[in-house]
Image (cartoon, rainbow, N blue to C red):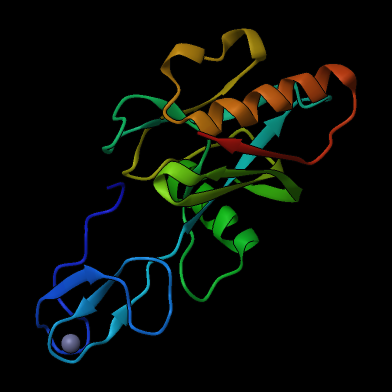
Length: 184
Ligand SMILES: [Zn+2]
């Protein structure tokens, strides 16, 4: 399982068991053995940015992770969306928290379905307003990279690699589209 199985009921604290509900639902659910509450589990959104710098946007900001998983690997600023915020605000917030970077968001750039782990990753293109970064505790180092400098073998996540590949391909073409991919 990509996410720890539910063990206890959120309503009453009793044990749950995974089984088909009695209402015709075709998926196995965590169901409370006492109060019979059905606990539905759905994909989570990960939101982030591609912060770029330079006349043509030839440099991109990456963060070296100071937390598990993938400690010491490089990533675009991104994290789980919080309740009460929009995807765009979540992307902006993660960029503040992980890089301390001042950005202006352009628009949605990639949407990546990571079905195996039950996640949808959304990256926004974002113009950096300065090259002053003050990363938070989650980040060891935040710095700009040109395509040649990108640590391709030390990227934290496949969605980051995919997004960067799109970015530098679009940069060469001189035209940025919106990209949707399914990552297995
Ligand atoms: Zn219960």
